[in-house]
Length: 300
Image (cartoon, rainbow, N blue to C red; front, side, top):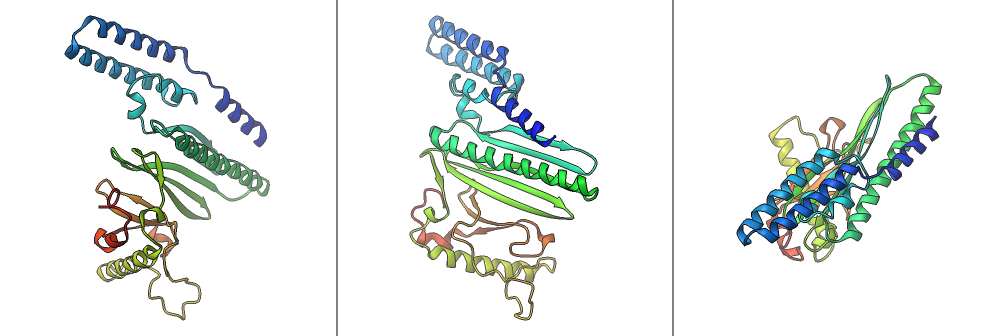
């Protein structure tokens, strides 16, 4: 049952054709745009082409942005549109049974000039989510044999930042099986230079690990002092055997950059506090890290 489902999904993913109406809409729009350019003066030409592109954009999306894996290549034939569509749902895996629920959305980036980076990220997203789906299906089959339990997974994405320069995408996985866990992963891209920004690449040396970690600890203490509902594993009593206190961030700690150019460090559920705290984020004041930044291109 599992193999047949996966084979079907794979064939559907690899062989879905571009809808005929999509191709005709694109060709007609480009032809009409060309006729307008020949007949009108410069001012009217710009207005006409813009109007045509708006019609094409709306029409193409109406046909169905998720209707075909080859949709992206069709968009690239239309001027400007490729730069408008940043992130879309490329594929979705779903399971909806009494005790088993899965909703796994696969994001895809479109419009990057660096196609090698774009393809690399999109392949990573597809591979991650395909693996997640396969693991869910295998666990579901095992649980059916045991005739008990509940299993759920919800995976998707959010666009945290989308400016002329920065694109920050967060991908999350919420798993429910007795208890729940939540994991967030971020990718931050310099759209202008076509590069993936890593946390170490922002700084002159690895001193950022200690500096950022100490600032986060200070923020944790301030939050706990202001609100009894906040609990972080900092300044933990040494007698607490089952709690591992937060010491420092990892060199490649999860992060994103806000529209205002601020660095935000993110921790998964259970990483720095009890489960009810969920995902925890800390915005790092720029003045704290200004002296060790490589430049102020991203962080201001």
